Image (cartoon, rainbow, N blue to C red; front, side, top):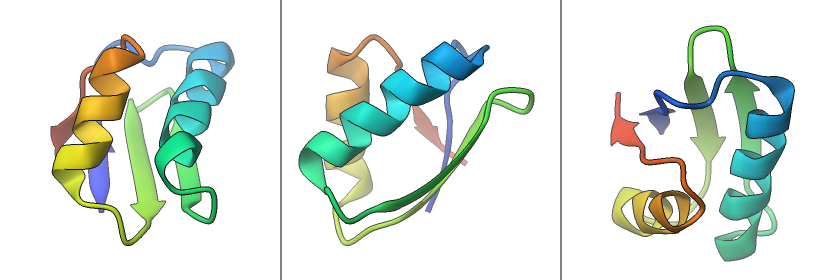
Length: 64
């Protein structure tokens, strides 16, 4: 799954995004790219659940 996170602009943001995703799936494989603002996630968690936890962390996401 690939998500677009408009306000993920730096490495610190990417770490926060990763931490938020891992809070719902500790085994998720996550690749963040602040330059393109994309996150690729290999997970069994639904996109809705990921969007909810990211929104709560201050990083609203859309499915790309």
